[in-house]
Image (cartoon, helix red, strand yellow):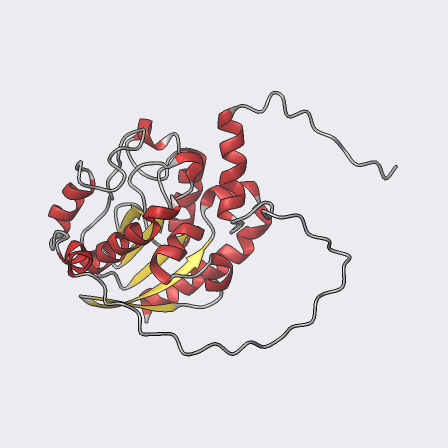
Length: 254
């Protein structure tokens, strides 16, 4: 009694390890351990205020960086073609690219982090068990895949399902451009990566209220919630997810 259970990690293959990392990623965990050991029982050192001279103005963003965003295709059809081309940031990743689906003028746009492992065989984002749960979520608010524009921050699945840090800013810019081309009335962000890409904040902070998202075509109202794969692993979160879906309905009917 009171013994700490041990686990045999020998059979832990790559797919299972990646699945575990996905679960924690969807929950918003960014760091498992710190680089340096910490003595949690030690007294906290006294804090000393240090006044530094005012920082010099930040250098202007190079014109080439601004141009790269401005030069993204300005029609949805051309943009989706570009997302599947060799010019896309994910073009050299393993796997196949999956494009967005659904009407170009949908009132509701749904954004997830990336395709799941089985999505390539299905040929679309959100398949398998997460897809079936997602379909039920849509039905609960009077929507379906035929009425909703569904997209992902990454067109291919990154290693361990996590967006590479060096591409996160670029993919966020591309994602917000995509939102502007669709210009939905409401935007449902499923998972931490989608919340970070559009709102610039973690899912845990973004949940609980709607957000105004400005884009070149006007404004959309965004609601952040849990990815279906997280709800499968943690069914108790479904009650909170339902509150988020009700908030989406409110934005659609406003």
